[in-house]
Length: 251
Length: 251
Image (cartoon, rainbow over the protein chains, first blue to last red):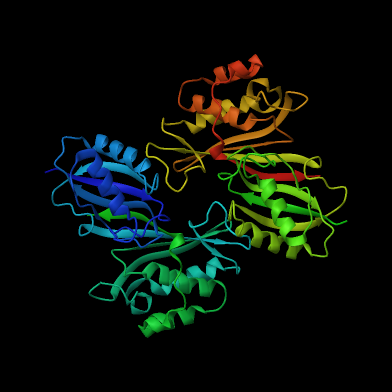
């Protein structure tokens, strides 16, 4: 049976998250409903990462096995048509790319590197176009200080401080490949990459970096929070609004 | 009586345009309603440009005369509070700056230069986050060809071809100061500046540049359309979604 690989963009605002939920729309549910309308099949779509409620994607990757004669191009076009006209969440999900994958390809388990971007808008005035698409921070932030402090997080650490109590990962030890904080006008962007992340790890790291940026914390405070290996040492968890799942790399 | 100068950002999607309308919400109406709630006064807010339905702003300028003891900072903060909690269009307008202006200052008549940006997203997949915030063009566009052709529009011309039938300007002769077409990933940005524009001029120029970009028109076709001085020679009018009023300069 053909395995299809999908690259997905979505606006997280109307969703309870990636994973199918009883109590509200999910990205996975929207795609599976579109597949059902196109092929009549009840298929399971497996994503590289289970993004939370309100979290966005510009390059989530998923796979799905479908006994269909449709070419990948036709399937992608049909999915986009049905996602655009979906009754519950019209236009919130788009298929950027649809290809045939090898049967050994698994969107989640074959992934070797994941990249997220966290977007802060740093200004006094409320957001208009960017409502729900960025974290609005009023206090002036020092992006250079945030970048410098963030480098202590790179490498292999026990990230218990930056881990949600709901995290299902077997170990709190992860290897952060890179973290870059840059400024573009009133936007401050935090780009992070790793093989995998703990639940809430990016939002928790960004929340603490915000405290460094506004002068509440020193770089030493951030290192002490990491060293504490204790969720109680977390300074702040950033809201989902600014988080984008950007890219997944495979071997 | 103090004259206040407001710099405004707005999401044009929920509005019938800048100007007060009987048949739907306007940006002017939202700001005047907020002023009424703050001061009890019925004031007229005058904008530098009357943007159309669905058109956005990142730097519209307006003035308003208000017999109030509020400082400009307090007025700006109060406006943002009431605009954010507006019942009809919550969070769609933000005051970026509020200052006291000289009584000789007039947001519309004192303006000497206006800058707009038009945003195209050039890709096959439908838009998600950018729905209503950019023009989605599927056919691959050649931004360099668009930029080169656009230069024939710079300077003083009779822009009748690029003028709406509803335009109220006395003369169709305008001086285009600059036009730049640049590419940033999948986005194509058209930045234009002039002392003033005809109604629909930016959208009409961008519509024709899209035809150059997709190969339907040559640079000569664009020049011929301009030379025709005839609305019937217009190739295409771009939708409001991608248009942003960016900045107003005063002497």
